[in-house]
Amino acid sequence: MPQVVIENPVLNSPYGEPTQHFRFDDDGITDEVVSGRRISSYFVPIARPRKKGQKQLEFDTEWTKDRIEENKLVNQIRARVRIWREGGYVGVTPTTNRLLTYWTEPDREKKLFYCQVEALETAIYITEVAKKYGDAWIENQVRNANDLANPGLPRMAVKMATGSGKTVVMAML
Image (cartoon, rainbow, N blue to C red; front, side, top):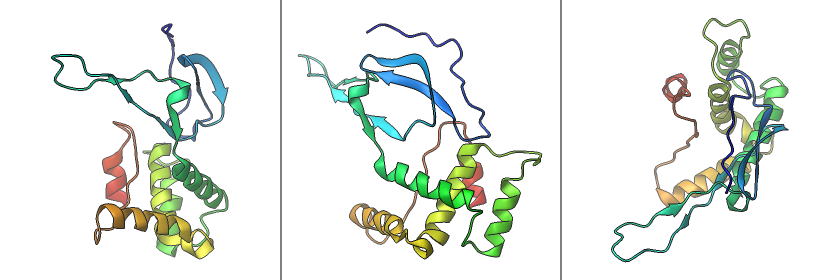
């Protein structure tokens, strides 16, 4: 597989929704920039056969298009949260509305990263809004997954990159 060198991998501002990304093909990542946000997905690792004397399985970590698996639930929730955001955060309590207004203020001195705002919006949408507007399926799916993994211990998680401000988000919730 040929190595692709991307001179400047930063395509988007950390303060706005991603608007472009690098394309993957059958050989891996390319330097071709594609418009739009990349859908949420993950790469399926494939374990290499164990060799004699090898103590641990190794995973083939080639990031190729044929190993991409879409996170359908994440993409569905993102779409619903985007519609809700663009509609002005309808259905939240007055306190939550004031917080969302403050957190997303364009002239705010310490602006939040887009991923932080999106994580907050998602948690708020699922807990305060979804079932009021026909999206009870989201909470039900989260509850069912919790019951399978940890009965009696309801939890919700958001995935954020290293250094993206997870601790700040947890403090804000």
